[in-house]
Length: 480
Image 1 (cartoon, rainbow, N blue to C red):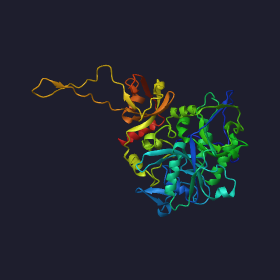
Image 2: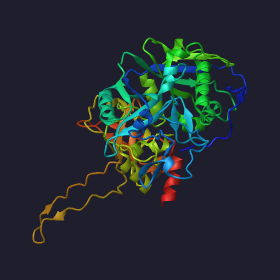
Image 3: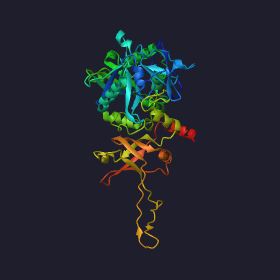
Image 4: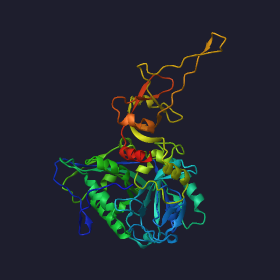
């Protein structure tokens, strides 16, 4: 879903210039850490875009549209246009990635996109990031065919490789699992100084807006070259691929001081990404801070984002339960057939989705450490203590007997499940019937808890308002 913006990028001599309304004495911040549990499947060949388009939830081909739940070619339907994205043959040339939705319609990018792979029943097998590679093209062989890296958790990489192999059939595509010692994956967060009176986050005007205006291979390549030269001058060749994490777009709109989050892939010989960081043309200095994967995970959880199988179990959740429909270009509903498409399309079209992932704060989270849950721990609603809940009366054994048989207490229906946590932050699946009271009712807000087996420890779950809540409310009103 495209986000609304109020300003366009400042362009000077064909380059995108970062604006700063005033100088600040405070430092900008470059935070980074290596993510050690990521693996990559390399996909290359004339049919690689069509191949991936049939396996993932995102729409990667502008020349396909949905018609009566089937996939048709644009040549078979009169009057269909790709909304000003330059027409191209994805079997020839390394164009980058097609993105279905942006402020100015579809756009092309040399940066990655977040997506998912489903099983045949529509359950999320794993989330993934697809990167066009190499990020910068400077040689003839690199321009010949589409080429991608598909990033998944190391624990499922062998399975994904086998799935890709089984779907190759006669497609003109080659795929293989890249040895783990070949590449490194880095989490990066870049924040600018907190200037007084700043009303709009600088990343919106200087990164998001120009990125979503790219319509040609040349402009997307030029944009990628300029961005790397801005932050990694002299070390551009060390970066294999990059992902501008659009999942944080809502955070940027709500917070003018929020940092932009990136995912960067380098070759294994880059053991410290900060040594490649070389910002150019800024009127302030950067503080460089090495953080831990724990810090990066907590940052994700504050925005209600999962990432990888450390955060959920494969084949247990629908992509829409993890809010893929509120993440830019993470799922498409008009691309036609792909693995797991039928249930996803039906869920979207009916509007019936009874639970969603929300960010939570956790009180006494240390009690959860080492609890060893076999399933997602259930989240229960704290019972009222004012006597409003009355126990059912026992029923007589028979009309001719004074003895009674005690009635079993009805088991409380869980309000949701706790998916994952890190410190006092986490992600929970919460039933939508609790949204209004949890997010807007300060007086009668329910108390949620997780019960631990064989202990009286109390763990309280406090749902936080998700970034997508207002949009969800609008959709609910339309569905009524």
